[in-house]
Length: 361
Image (cartoon, rainbow, N blue to C red; front, side, top):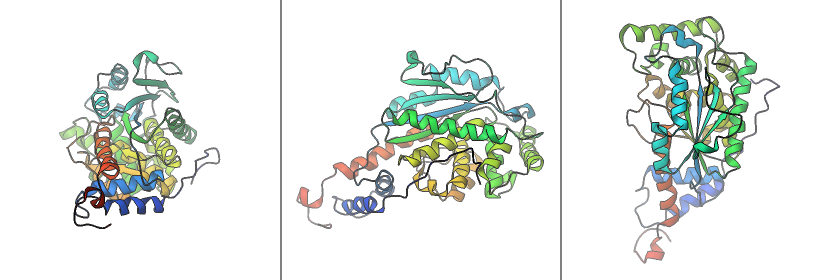
């Protein structure tokens, strides 16, 4: 269920013919059938998404949405709320893990302030001096409300956050884009993600709530109770993705919903990061179930709820490195596996070309 004010784009079906052609070529390459495992599956998925038997991931980007959460008042994070703003500044100056890994992966980084409290060195347009990191100010509010007392945001704010994500995809595609990775920053956003996961998957709160920034003991028990209270106070409707987002979500999560839907509408594969991106994917697929075919799970987070999210979406992660940082770090690491998938498809010789006996011709 969506509001009439939110005009979500249509999402085309996967191109089955392109997928079949990619699989047919895989069968002719100089290797036993299926011996490259997930790489072969990835190459076919990318072919179907992009609508060509010769997919490419050469032009790549990660969009990092950043926002604060009112529920941080409940002591659910090991870090103070001002860390969100401080880390966004770190992103812009190239000093965070996402910057390092994106440089290694050859991905440009776009950071969007969609709801950070406090001043940031961001204007309405890109900061040229921070290239290859681009920063945009699209702040809808100075963070969400405390969802243990009231809805995290209004329905209109939730819809506006999705529109920011749609706009961000348009800006990226105007520069040329083959594949998009998702990233996030927001103190207390694992609490919001746990609430979304519990609401949509139906799993118990204790099963989908993790340690986040490293809360332990009484602090962790308080976090679980905080998620339970948010659900009791707000009663989000799992049949209505916007209702879930507005009542127990976050502005950066809504931004990522728009990123997912906008990319899928343009036949661009979406490489999901961890738990926060997974929560956004739950809402995106509640709004547009056909978006599921465009999703690639980069890794399985150490966050407890991420496994439940992946199982609900039917996604098999590429990596399991016990990551729980967010920022898009797992997603950009996986970009290099996508490159391996498309390069083996495009560049390996066939049995006939290599004059090797065996295989199909």
